[in-house]
Image (tube, rainbow, N blue to C red; front, side, top):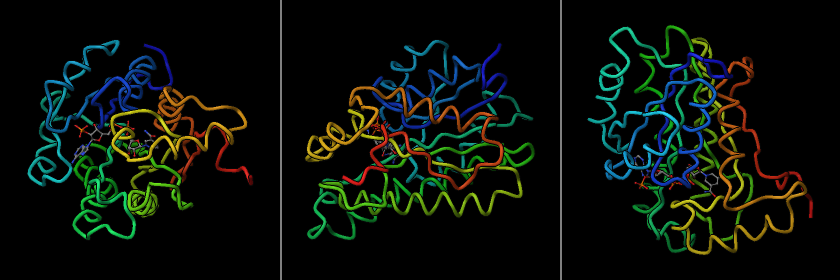
Length: 257
Ligand code: NAP
């Protein structure tokens, strides 16, 4: 098998529909030669149905990142598929959730905010450490997805704060895991019409910015550019890049007006 991920074993989270960025990551990873294992949250039969649309079969392991028992069991479940002396070359964190209250900055309760931060930011640490025994011998690449947290966006509110925490978490992971040759990077994607996006009240208003400000254009229904960015960071073509945030946003991040 040829391709930039030939022979690599990659765990991909966050597949729920074929609009999920995670689905496209899994697809391109397989096309580039990787063996892919998926995790699913709750609705496993739905994830399994979507997984059938991938070029090759991919097993699905249940994982709620708020469930410590499932995190503790993840290594064992992966070994059931890959074998006892197996290793992972890459882990993709494509998970975010904010309760509706988190999208009202001044009214949000700590309960809403803490859920958003737990699922969307702390989970990068808990997922990575859960997979660490499978990566620490040979090294690997952890890649997550952010929505550029440098700015106060319309409507994004405490999810923006959770993404700022995710970005910081990624840097600390990069610091602490560098000695094991484990890289940790993020793709800062432009808006994509996924399930998570649809649950953001006022997503259209947020996405509207891209219509006018992306110098190379941006397609809301296209998860492919972000997914290709993730696959690039999973590959051996960024061997000395860690703690980085790569913008895959049509260029919006660098426009002044
Ligand atoms: P998506 O298809 O809805 O994926 C989000 C995934 O997170 C879903 O599979 C969801 O599962 C899962 N999830 C939620 N709570 C979880 C938990 N407790 N444990 C494990 N998984 C959980 O949306 P997406 O747009 O592809 O999002 C993937 C990533 O890209 C997220 O980090 C998102 O913030 C980021 N991103 C998205 C955009 C965008 O505009 N879409 C832009 C920049 C960055 P359920 O659906 O079953 O709840």
